[in-house]
Image (cartoon, rainbow, N blue to C red; front, side, top):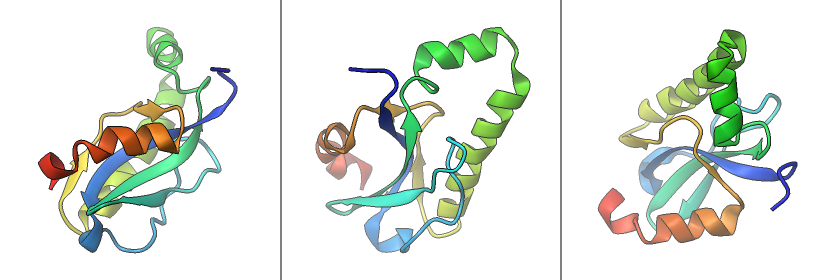
Length: 118
């Protein structure tokens, strides 16, 4: 896997019937919109994100270096997406920094958890 590729960043999971059509909030990666991916009865709030910029090791480096502005911008974007979804209905929030290599990896991970997330 090349680290300069775009991955899928996951914010949270909602029920498909309560999630709505679109998310107006911006994603953790500047300039990237948030979209809802439907998997069975679930709606997953996701956006594209750099696997290099948001890799766990890179986030740890920002934390250790106390790069507050970098962390604050992305954590606030993450929280804003979740708040928008929570106004629509119940949401299972996902912790900051959860990335998937691609949509297929995300679908595989979530498909097996659909029943427990409902």
